[in-house]
Image (tube, rainbow, N blue to C red):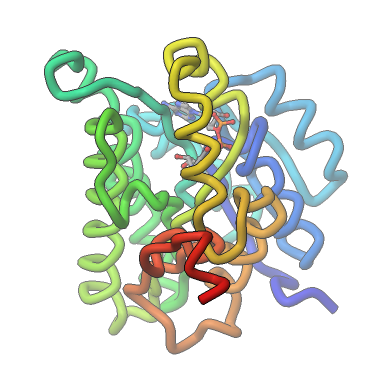
Length: 260
Ligand SMILES: NC(=O)c1ccc[n+]([C@@H]2O[C@H](COP(=O)([O-])OP(=O)(O)OC[C@H]3O[C@@H](n4cnc5c(N)ncnc54)[C@H](O)[C@@H]3O)[C@@H](O)[C@H]2O)c1
């Protein structure tokens, strides 16, 4: 029996990448899952692959009307909402001087305001149940700052603050709120930025290698961390940041020092 048997989950940004794997992992554990995204065709295909316990709904996380519709449809179809995974996000790379106010606002709108709106939208149902788990997918860039990643980093710090405040506000209503902070994710998110980074190939490779466990986290590793926080195995855990980063944020790593 799966650890999410009889549970109902909504996952944002689930048409591809990490979100698709999170949805598949929750279905594997017995949950009925609503995959949501702005990519309708890919989302329908992703849900179809997961069988009868998965379906797709269009949801732009920045639109309150979309949240209201998806929450209402989920309650109509499934009767409850136990888990909400805020996974949808966009990336922007640029120094402060090379990032317009409009771009900065857009990144915050999707990555931080979106999860706020979604959290508000599921609260009546989760409070009525006196049970719920909300997982926010942040990033290592939400744990430590990074030059040239200003807007994204600010948005991912923001979502962690949202999660911690939600944890304190909602614990007495049986609702937990936690963040997962991965190092790594889908190529389709950062791929379009690679031409801009071409001159820094060695530096970016070193960035990924100089950590306890070299390389980046797999989709599966990130999804298993989300599953843990979503499940009753984490029943006393709320307000935490769970890095899935091979120790990248544990401290400084200097390869040569490993032979001292
Ligand atoms: N890619 C990385 O290297 C990396 C690293 C650390 C953390 N993350 C985080 O992991 C999560 C998953 O990202 P991914 O790597 O799978 O990238 P991805 O780009 O494949 O996934 C993001 C998804 O969000 C969707 N999305 C974008 N704007 C939306 C909106 N307004 N409303 C609804 N959906 C929207 C996209 O269509 C896409 O399917 C994100 O929160 C991301 O910030 C990614």
